[in-house]
Image 1 (tube, rainbow, N blue to C red):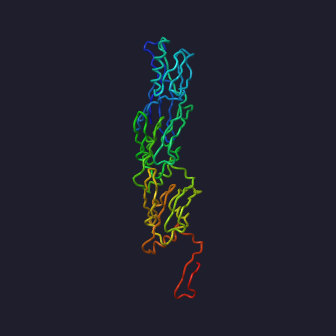
Image 2 (cartoon, rainbow, N blue to C red):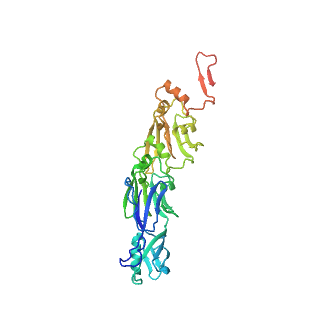
Image 3 (tube, rainbow, N blue to C red):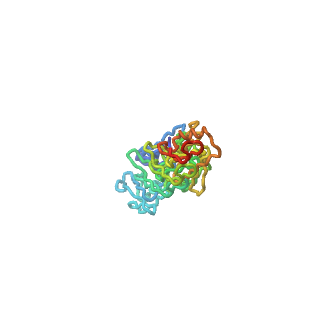
Length: 378
């Protein structure tokens, strides 16, 4: 998908006897792992695929830390590389300091050309980006580790890969299960707010949503108004979800064998930390439990509490795996007591994977017309 934007420019006078200096264009191909920027040595525009809906990428703007090359045609002693200084200037031969911060490469070429005009009869000058500075971005909202991050830009023989929003979310520890991926916002200095729908990326492969980042971007992940258990597994397996090889701390209360704080360890098979696994860790569910009215309480980054209803009876009877909700750090599971006895549910519970282990003795009391009434161990 085409993202043409200029990364180098020259503008010789029409009557120049030399071949016009080349212009360099920035072409971005947006993919899940990065945005490819290729450099050309001839003036051309990159052909855009007619089916793309992706907007054109913005031209790269220079800033402190960038390394650029100044090509002065036919004056090799002035052709060299320069580092953009912390004050946004470059100290050029002959003309001294020139401010380039915030300029595109085309604009920088024009500014430098004007500074050399009094000294060169026909200045043919091109500014080329050699090594871009790391990007400083901020991530907030429903993210595991909100804060500010410095992300390096990968440079190689085929060009430069600018980091994408999903790469930034991964570096920040991944999204939480309370994230509203349809309303992600990127605040860009001088541009305003860019709306991003990462759910469209997950469900339809819309690569246009995995936008390339720029220095100073702020990413905000809002909290979903409600949790969709069916979409939880998709969020948990996204490339920008938290790593699944870390234990999570939860609390299980109500009709379980061992209520209280629990640690759900990573599964050797890579299985997600779900309610059924948490109930197993808590010793299994009791026969007095009402598994059709289980509730998961989840704190959001904004300080609110979300209540998610889960019906494990539908999991046992209909195989509805969406009811086996994926958990996250800090969740609390409430297993209520059934108000009436249900023989069919009792049979389902006894055979469930989250029932108490059957290889452990149980203590019961038998009274009435039996040979040995009283406490018994079965």
